[in-house]
Image (cartoon, rainbow, N blue to C red; front, side):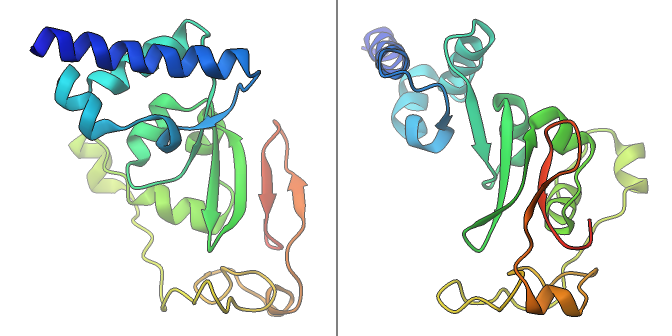
Length: 178
């Protein structure tokens, strides 16, 4: 039954990928496609993820990762990454660009929390700890939603919502201070 479950899970992933191709969908959010509990039970831990990475490498699908809890997985699976804060995208670029050169203060804080496997690098890294409470998404602050926790916030951040700007290399940021 284990081999049959593995094949069934793999076929389900493959059908999902084929359906996306026939519908001309080339960007998906990983969490909308993957059902890790079911697929990992059949394929073993990480099996579904490995299969999706293989499908991506073969050009069958293109992923956009919207930051979630496992930033290391998003980095390795996604072609592009969009970082959201209180329901608004604050930064978007290729995964390589975001992880090498984060611009938005929230993105920098998020990435500073990702453990680095090299103990010498990890020891020297600066961890960014955000101050303050997360505002209510139902009643977000005026202007930039991140301003109440942002170490770079200025008066304009409370007065105006930041506009999207391309800061080079198709790297988009919504921040007055970047």
